[in-house]
Length: 318
Image (tube, rainbow, N blue to C red):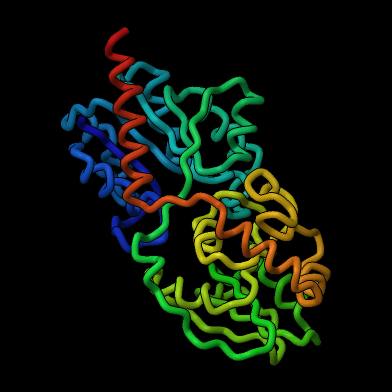
């Protein structure tokens, strides 16, 4: 099948932590012919569409508004798929109007033939809108189980992986561990605007290659999710690591169960103190993580490929 993909990525790589850096390669390995329109080539999307003559157009990110609009105007004749990969109005920079982004998001979802997502929160949202939607999880690197843990110092070790920024609410985590008998490891690139001064028990590790991250996850006592999101790749990596997870109540409640697969709280400091003093709860959370079903990227790619193929074939059969 000929698939044209348009997303916000600037590259594609099987080693990237981002879903749509990988998915075109996975779809290609499943036998499809791919025209991958990178961000720098957005302006050429429609001319490439006419030349490539795809069987389906797949979008991810707020750029999905463009093919949805062209389909509405009758300029795209084939089915379009939108992978609803983020809560766009929540993650877009403040310079963009939140109300406008929300309108573009809803227009994209409602005017796309096939909608997929990695978020159970967005599944519930689509259903409230009366829109059919298909859930696909994030994938895990197939060599994850083979990675051996590194050595981290500390009696009680917490770890956060991701961008170190106010947008990701990492400042709340840094404040939460002050004067506690624990060590916090922050892995990832520090945003230049992040000025919160870490205490002596906060260790800035820096960037770690995605395929090397499991070694750090397996070395921690507790892994921390600070974002109000239930579809981040690191959530699945944390679960695969089989470690207790501490997260902030909100959208995570759509994917994880409090005191079963994570400790979900509105107060990170309270959560840390609770976990530090309850070994039985830590064991229960680790067991919950290990019991959570995860899939490799190759499995996710195959499931996605099969689903889109089946849906397009049914459309042709009408």
